Length: 603
Image (cartoon, rainbow, N blue to C red):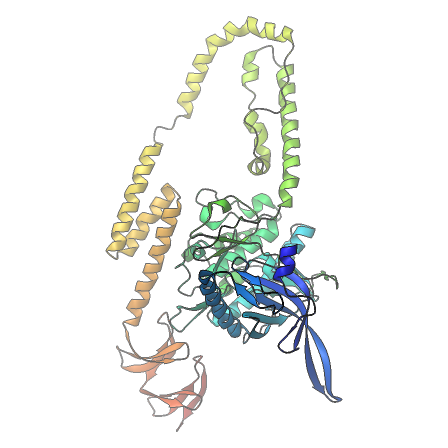
């Protein structure tokens, strides 16, 4: 508690020469402190100018493993020169990204009001939302109704479409980053780890690489996995969020799914509709190319007809929005301490990090599952013991009792709870029964070898390949796939690698398939770009001359024509570019590729 007091600014602290006043701390993560505060401003109306106080949240950049608060001045200081380099690097990127987001306004995104520097660090003033997160809602009320989840997903999906259209990825979609406001609407928060891309769809800004275990796509585990713009990492996370809200279970980490396959949502919650389950499964495909291409395509695949028009969830006015983030600093690619945990957790990847023990939250669902699992196992054990006790006279009858099949109907519990290899409940038969069984022992022994041999002959599958044969086949296909990739035969490589994945699912083959898909897409785009002669940048697009007809137009980063290549020439207009038509009139386009005027005699 003393450390917490030293780290944060005191209640009532003023920022920006009294423009903002901090009332108290509401949350704290690995690289930031969030305060509740007020903004002193003026509102002009028919009665003149009126001074007012607007509730806000202020996030302070404070990299706690490298920083400390200087007593008196309240300035943020860094312990070492190495830490200072990291601190300044991430501060600059945070400011740049926040300024971009201050221009992004959407009804389902929490608005950034201002970004500024003070106390040797950076601050982001944000709109205050009276409500609570979906994570809080899930922990308090249990799994959400499907109709409620669909309403929130549609709203967050619309927000993601909006930022994706501006070449911005969120990269940290999860229940704790979705707030439900007093009107029952979802609001997306925390763009602190987002990335923005330029006209070539290459990364231009980012804060630090973060991973929310269970919600991050496999490409986010690779420092180069998100260097080129694609909505698919956010699509994976949105699918994982749906999975969590509808099952109460955090999905298996994407990087671990080769060894621990993801259970279908309906196996945990049978009430999930087949259509919604199909969307979740497709959105959460390990290989990016197998997911939906856009959020719009994902939303179009959902059935919103049953979605609630009005969710009756009204947050308590006194409830604070707290920062539920748990941050762990680790060395790339992943800290072994993190493997196997099912708790939602954000992981921050930085260079040369200090040793920090992971901080995890208790998973309340496990507390419920374990007693239930033990009770079920005791009941099954008791029933088995009763059968043994009542039918002991012949050993043949005892051998016919199949304990595993008795447990199988509740396989969901057996997967969650580690059961001992021996029964918990053990009942010794009476001595008289043991003697009776010994008398019949020779008779049973004479029949058992023949029955056992016969059973083995029936169950053996002679065509089943051995483990060594499967490994040899897998290794051969991997080697062939790599060789074909080196020769730029990506279709042949994809065929071999897909067969290798069907033979044995490993992290290696998944990464190779992703790399093969990326190379295939790069080659496709390069081949399309070769059809054009690039002239100049025009907003997010490039003005080009098509080689086949010598006509001008504009293409995007994937060589798709955004302005058709049908014009004789192109010139600069006051509000965009003027393209000359065959009839010598001019069409005017703006930098978004929209036609704003056509058939003009001059410009």
